[in-house]
Length: 446
Image 1 (cartoon, one colour):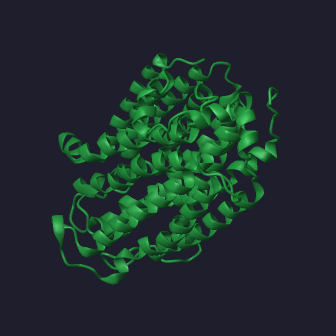
Image 2 (cartoon, helix red, strand yellow):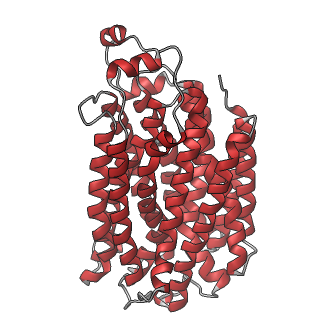
Image 3 (cartoon, one colour):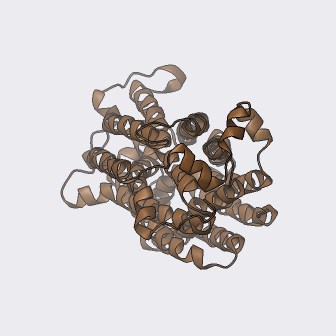
């Protein structure tokens, strides 16, 4: 297939539509995990530790999903069986996680955590694992089915749907509060507005994934090989290579883009962990370090506003994703996006009005849009013709997970060094994005 056909807009849309539902689940997790565990009784200095396990699971799961889906060819498809299984597990866990405080597990167990926190922690592990299983196939299917010329556009459509899903997920708690569902609960219990948000998000997730599952027809092996210029006979004679060997042979683009990813994802881990405390302290005057502060109406109101500013970030990402394909140089787009996002993060040190915080997060959205679209476009173009596309995309996910693990593991120490100020942690996130922008120069493209 020398002339690779272009897909229509709606074909690319259908290819990624299920990502909308998956991202609702991811947004609910991102915006509410610190709030949930703080409400269950976690110390603010411990919050970053709860963020270690989600990326750790992604680091383990996604390379395996890539490896085995590369070898999967059946009547259901190549990548689609994995996204369906992941979505079903995610739905089940989304129903359990927000009920962690409803079982009245108050006894302190191992590491000083009560049973409710342990229940929530294991639920979080399963939720993030299942989201990773469902999320990765969408990135792989674009790599499988879209030609080089259209990949930036296809990943921008995916970025648009991703951010639209984020917008919905972030706004659910404040929306359900607005229509009359309680946003307060007894100490140690999750507010009904958050529980309802997870229930509705689970329903939308499975419906969106089923839409893509039934609308998209993946290429059979012969057509796939022709599309990517792969010699099936030669491939069959080539010994199977493990993930470690593939990593050693990874193209330079893999490593240089991975360096940029390291700084970017460490920054956003800090955003997810410390935005709630920053808003509570700067805009509501509530010190989250004070015992009992997380049960106050002000802290829960700040928790709802986290959803609002994250939704504004998603709007900024949606708008910026439309502009990224218009840049003549994709690396220039990458640098500009990250620097604008850095300004947004650093400004949160000085903002004490909740509406001005929306402006800061609008700027942060530009960095998020670039992180979702540009790295995968650069990498899949560098991997064109490789029979290990899925494996490499799975391994590339380690450049997303590892920085989050490092940032989460060191977050408790770093926040002590800045005097317990969660706003200072967001400013540090801005510095990380500046380092990421400087690292873009190292990326080599074909």
